[in-house]
Length: 121
Image (cartoon, rainbow, N blue to C red; front, top):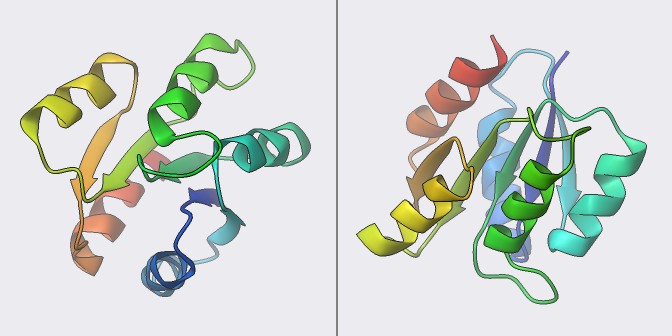
């Protein structure tokens, strides 16, 4: 039963992602509104994959990825960046600091499911 941490400041986007993730059998979604909140959840839950936005208040997705990669306990958790930042530069930066994949918004449900499944199956 995979546990997916969705780090996104937009309630609407969390809802859309959650709706898509319901198509993954037995997946459990934990919601987080920013990087700081995500780190708290990581310390109390067994997370199998992280889906994170880049632009968030308090701590953005890139800072979260670098902290996750820098922590021996979390460094092997796959991270997918989901963002409106479609620029090639942002994609390169996210992948360079350790994101496993990059999905531009608006997300296509089937692309998200295929990507998540490729990391959890």
